[in-house]
Structure formats: structure tokens, C-alpha cells
Image (cartoon, rainbow, N blue to C red; front, side):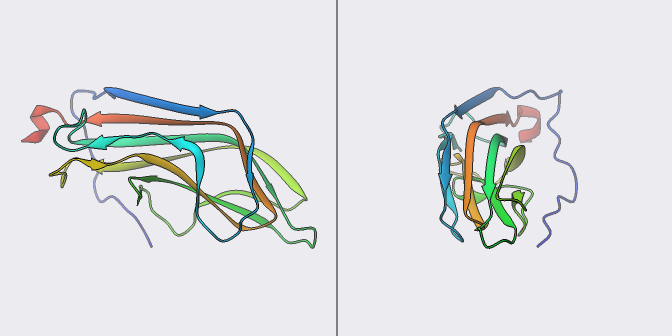
Length: 165
């Protein structure tokens, strides 16, 4: 399922994000539920786009970074932890069927990993709607998948008057 932007999206005038929001958590959270997408508790920034919001038309860029632990079953095999960032429940870009975030071949392995996703709200936003970035994860196989010292950052790049057209 390729997700390819055919041409770059430019924001003129050296556009800087006009709004930046950050959430973080230091407590360790682990799950042993396999095969199910789950929300990482607290890793969500409430955000609206559309008429009447602070960012009516914009590009949102979310960055998530964390120390992660993933463990494999005692019986052996690999452990695979998947992660994505949704915007108002919709998949961000780039989209893929492979959301591999952390793997382990030993009993447990730690890592520090970062991912970015973007969503284009420059067109097709005729009413206010939810665009909240939410970190979701899935223990595809293994015994546990955990996060600590995580940070979620949202940058909003608004459409300028000259781009509106």
C-alpha cells in the first residue's frame, strides 16, 4: 500500500509553525495484549482544525519519541512492536502496512526510537473537526511492549493568505 506524495507541499515565506504543543510522560507503561491496536495512555494532544479553530487550514506534523522495551516469549522467536500516530482517528502520512517500531530477539530489548507523521488539512476542511494526534501501538508478537520517558510534539503550519488563493 504505497503512500507517495506526488509533489511537495510548500508553505511560502519560510513558514514557521505558529503553534507547537507538547505532552510527555516518564512513568513506564507496558502491555502484554497482542494483535490489537491500543492508545498509549496520555499520548494525545487535543486539536481541532477547520473554521473557528486556531488552525483552520494547516499541515500538522507530529513527532513521537520514547524509550521502549519489547520482550519475546520464553519459547523463542522474535518480538515485534508496532506504532503509529493517528490524527482524529485517521492514519497520518506516510501510510504503510508496516508500522514496525521495536523488535527483540533476546528475552527483552530496550531502545530509544522516534517516528514522525504528517496530515494535510490545507484542503477539504469545511467544518471544524478533530485532528488530535494520538499515539497507538500494537504488540504484533511477543510477551510485552512498553514505553517510558516519552514525548509527543505537534507542530501546526498554517495556510497563509497568499496560499488560500
